[in-house]
Image (tube, rainbow, N blue to C red):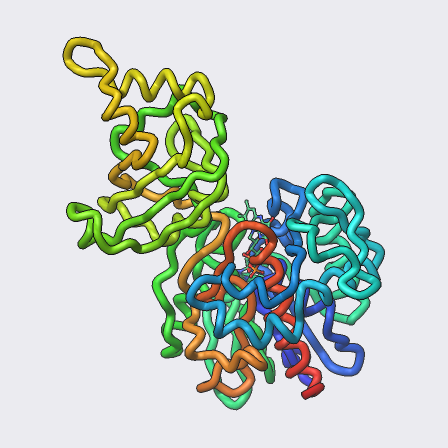
Amino acid sequence: MNDNIYDIAIIGAGASGLMLAANLDMESSRGIVLEGSSSIGSKLLMSGGGHCNITHGGPIKEFIYAYGSEGQALRRCLYRHNNLELARWLTGHGIALADENGDPVDPSYGSGGMDNAGRIFPASMRSRDVLDILREEASLNCWQLEADAKVSGLRKDGLWEITLVSGQEIRAKNVVIASGGITYPETGSDGSMLDIMEDLGIDINEPRPALAPVYVENYPYSELSGISIPDVTVIAFSSDAACTCKGKAAKMKGDLLFTHEGLSGPVILNISKYVEPGELIRLCYNKELYELPRRMQGVLRTRSRGMLGDVRTNVLASFLDHDDFIVRGVDEHGMVTAGGVSLEEIDMRTMRVKRFDGLYVIGEALDADGITGGYNLQLCWSTAAAAADDLRGAE
Ligand SMILES: Cc1cc2nc3c(=O)[nH]c(=O)nc-3n(C[C@H](O)[C@H](O)[C@H](O)COP(=O)(O)OP(=O)(O)OC[C@H]3O[C@@H](n4cnc5c(N)ncnc54)[C@H](O)[C@@H]3O)c2cc1C
């Protein structure tokens, strides 16, 4: 076989590309992983603040809602390659697991205590251990792993022809795009492959940051930076409704965190993809004043003062019920990207692009993203494993 011809080329050595390589034995065929940046798996290393929240406990049917409107389309591959399978693969490869309190999670038997585990991590709390085992297995599976191999072009001429920024040409029978989204471009995930796929005529839904802090006009809570309020209901209103307060884009409940510059915490991260500048966002604290942290009570009293310095109790009460802000922006450093390759383009059983022979898309490059809690790395696993099934002809 010609030196630059491969059976399978994976573009991107992030979580999904490595999960595929770790699951697909290439001993009797040729496989290459092309990674554009100089370091492998940078985003995986950052995940969970370096601890890597690899998946979530509970029955897989409860995962569907975590992916919003894309959940139903993902159902099939999530069910076939679920959280238990991922957890068992990791423990089977020497990565013990734990919940967020550090209590052991053992998926080896039945659902193995995973049902109530919540967020699941490697017991070492080191994302490096997950990256190392994926790399090790990819190498045992005989994949050639190339860093500094950024792809600048892709076209089909019998085989797939891949052009690298260096000018080098590689040809492959099958190409798997595992190039991630657009956020944290310094990790290498810069959306360049989405542009290349769009040039091929593949439908790309506009990528935008998700799981990101939200900034609002006239933010009054800078001095409360670091304070977290549990069980806050947050409502994002759609743009045509900002004045009338009708037409909710999304409503979610969870912990809210005040930062120096804006709003964060799980409930804000999860709702951020539904939020646009100029729209209204409403915080409902669902609490009596005395239940809030003392410093926040002080700020709310100050905000409720009238011209004569008196606290207007009706204004104070309305802040507790609906603290409204106009959105100034969403931080571009989202933990994931909403948008990407339209799921309409994909056979969700195999992850093949329906209109192109031998082309697959997995992981965050797809227009699918989950809330916080390990759902995004689970998505990488489920889509990578589905593509592996198809590529090894196990169907
Ligand atoms: C700070 C942070 C914390 C997170 N924490 C968690 C968590 O705890 N749990 C969870 O489930 N999810 C978490 N996520 C999300 C999760 O990490 C991602 O969804 C996941 O890593 C996506 O994997 P991927 O392989 O699809 O894409 P990526 O990890 O983005 O990998 C894509 C790879 O493709 C390469 N590439 C891109 N374009 C090209 C090109 N043209 N040529 C060659 N290579 C290219 C990139 O360099 C990159 O290495 C977190 C994300 C961030 C940013």
